[in-house]
Amino acid sequence: MKKLDNELDNELDEELDEELEATPAVSKWDGRMLSFWGTLLLATLVFALFVGAGFYVAAIVSKIMGNSIPLVQDLTNPANFGYLLAGGALCGVGFCWACIIYAKWDTRHTVVSGQRLSLQTNTWSFFWHCVLWLLLTVVTLGIFALWVPVKIRQWQIKNTVSVPYEEE
Image (cartoon, rainbow, N blue to C red; front, side, top):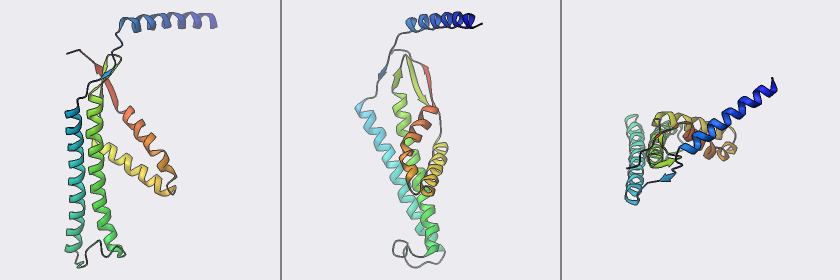
C-alpha cells in the first residue's frame, strides 16, 4: 500500500512539475508614481474627512444634550466619553477605509507567477476585525498589539485572490 502511495505521489509531482514549466513565471509590480501618490492622497483625505466628521458629530451631540462646556475641556465628565467614543468610531471607519483603498491599489498592481492579485473585501469586514483586535489589545493590557500587524497581514492575504494576467 505504501509503495502504491509513493508511486501516485511521484506521478502527481511529475504532472505538477510539467504544469509549472509550461506556465511563465511572470512576477512584477506595475504601479506608477503618480497613481501611488494619488491613491495615498485619496486615502489620507478620506481619513481626515472622517476624523473631522467624527469630532464634529461628537461636539454636536454634546451640545444637543445640553453640555455647554466643550468636549476637550471636560474630558473627566463620563457623559463626554460616549460622545468621544462615537467620534472615535467614525475615525476608525475612516482609517479602515483608507487602509482598504491603499491595499486594493497595491494588490491591483501586483502580478505573481502570471496571476494578478485582487483584494476581495469591504471596509466593514476590516473594521470589525480592527475592533476585535483593539478589544484584545485592551484586555491584554497592550500585549496583543504586538500581533496586530501580523493579523492585518494574515487578513489581507486571506482576502486576496488571483486572476489570470494578460500582458498589455
